Image (tube, rainbow, N blue to C red):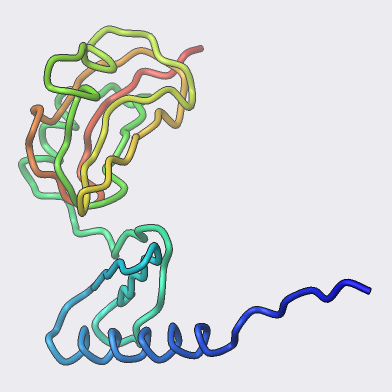
Length: 163
């Protein structure tokens, strides 16, 4: 009769303890998130807000959206027809139009895109996150320059939906 090895509970206990310690350090230092990687295990602790307890995430979770600046709202209102769809940054990071400095951009103004098509990359914490279109249509305007830092909820693209 073959025995199935049971996973060591000590490693789980160490992860729980490490998570608690990281949460305490994040709270003590006023950090919104902290991430470590060791021996092939990555652990990220991110606070959902200033008054809530820290929570653990495997994937970046966006914080509450800041209110758009008046200038940004004016640009979007001037350029966008009422039916336009705004693609917003789902995280804080650096906006890139292409997968590499010498590569062609994913999209250009005037291009027709499909729902789910990659529009850009946002680099956050050394991770490259592909941002996909949430609708099919034509790119009316690209609102961010290549290499520019972006905030959560910042308008990146305006898309005229396909009819």
